[in-house]
Image (cartoon, rainbow, N blue to C red; front, side, top):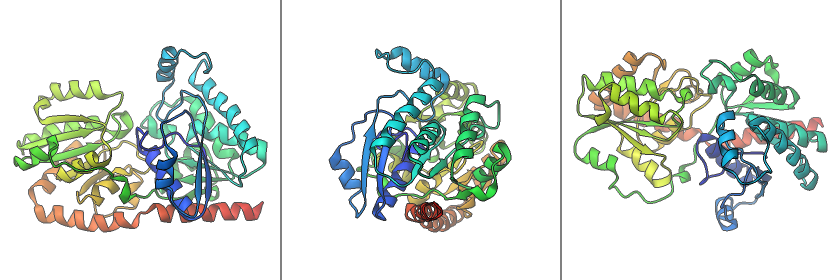
Length: 400
């Protein structure tokens, strides 16, 4: 299995998904060699603890500057800061170098199926298939159209995505929303694409909750808290969140808007909060994980996920697990799983503001959304996702 992140060294949902799915597969007896693009401080004890099961997971590393959500420009910045001359001259050269190294790893490993996550690993998966003759499954967590908000796409990324989908034996899409994009934008036969929804891992909220965080203190002081959790990128719609915040504060002044995460739009968002005149009511917490993130969910009155194009979206599941109702974009895959949520078009900041105010003002509505949504979120498990993946594996192996 080719991946990019592995908690606690993750910067987004892709790492969470790889962790949750791998853990569930291992518990079902699947043996996994999980390839990461760079050496990380992951101890054997940690892996044994997390994956203690009848199955087994083995981690392989090679030196690379690749990581999820990396742009061509940020890759060049990383390469300039590196003292090694080992890496490729561009992001795309590095992706090709990864593919060559993946072929060598495939020669050494004993496996039956190749499972590659997202475009950076697709060429690696193709090379491993070429070397081994084993079936290839590509797992699409996001497309270039999602990352650009259906704007101007990078043709090189599109080419790799399409090549991976074309040469794969099966494609896993994280939602029907994503499957439809794969079929419409990449010209793939819909019979080749299987939908496997992401899950939620209740044990992922590890760490102690102090009850003394800034958001907890705000809550105790009587303020309402509206939460955003995600990368600060165009795809996630954080700018729409701020515009809705402005409208909410015109009606409900005793509200704080907490933005949990980081990303290349952070400077722009801070400036926009100032320009809107609401910087005193917007809190940037930075990236949170474990107990700190769980505490943020529990302090909040409502989570808003205003994504422009969200293939799935694990954050609403995490929020509901912690008892906090959610407002989610209609342009998301998780809206297919969580029906007991208020839903908005990402661009409709007036309706977003109206729904935020409704949840804040009406406790019975908030309680119903939290209760019913929590039951739906509990049904979205990595065990169910693993079962579907194993079924895909078995059919491919039988066909071969």
